[in-house]
Image (cartoon, rainbow, N blue to C red; front, side):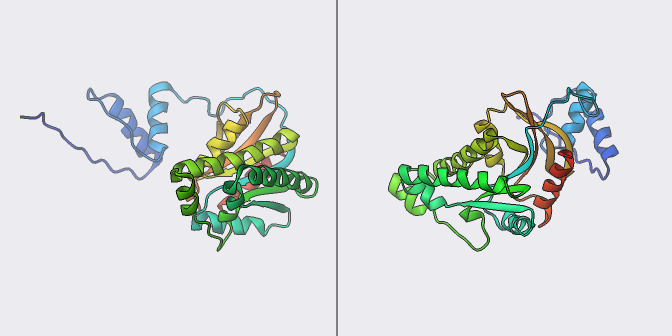
Length: 253
């Protein structure tokens, strides 16, 4: 006979409830894992290791500039509505990267990326916020990857990785050019690709902007830092991207 397994269901309605449950679990003898959106894991970690770095003062480093770069890679309807709202702001200029040109051939992709980088430089000199997004992230614009998958005998995941690396490369080129002190990313894969392209070891989280959207800093090799706001592609209402941008604007003051 197999070992008995018991399941316990405990409902929490406040942050205090979550903290009590976390502390109680640490006093139990049986093993467990945390599977949650993040708030319980944070409470469990704080109960086990202490309050962490929240509220502590870190060494202040100079931000890399006073402009903001928004990198939008999510293509779902929620992210598209957020992008549409963001692009209506008068202080925003944008560059749309054509996904089909990126995948068509390497020469065309390289030229398109160079043009996008040059356009971003122009926008940075004219607008407070520069947005870089895919053609498939624009409202009512759909790009099918099926023909590229069949042509190149590859997978959808590999195509998406190539697309993400392309936009991340342009973003890194723009940041390395100088002038951007804040960066906004939407979409987990895009955030990872951008941080990788910037050789950032990670994000130092400083605060929650809205549920499942956070703000913090990333450290650059030149000794400067960029404040970052990042969220999942499905997170928030139509104002979520603008809320993240407002956070960055406030941080750069």
